[in-house]
Image (tube, rainbow, N blue to C red; front, side):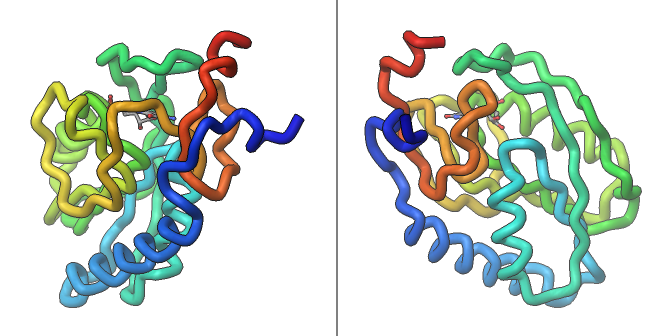
Length: 183
Ligand code: 5GP
């Protein structure tokens, strides 16, 4: 059975994703046009495809680095407990840092990461997220750049998974209910 057969409906098409990511790249280039080599911090695994496309639309010198935080596992609800499983290679002190997230849901993950980053003394700290679910927010987090706002539904594709699958879909969509019943 094809992977796409598990999709109930497409929320954001491949074309809309590509067009918006190009716009975000331009916004980021303008934001950092006068800054010395900003560091884009990609929060894995969900943001790997977004970051790969985004970085190619940024027209100023920058570096990328990666961190892995604990995720929901196979569940679709946040536990509110966040841990860093893999840390950055780069030092953040004195750097202009932009965190690149796949999705901000309750906000707990981002709140934890930004609090942690601030203790490292960056020159500035901004956040770019591809997706935001504003109606789900439980903690107040500052988002400088948002790709799309999405409704309160569990989404997959373009890097986002369910139980480690569906990350490779070229669009963002919602799974059929039977998929959850199957696992
Ligand atoms: P938060 O801590 O804001 O509740 O959740 C952040 C993390 O939860 C995201 O980085 C992502 O890994 C996961 N997450 C939240 N909502 C969704 C969703 O709709 N789909 C997927 N695949 N992951 C989600």
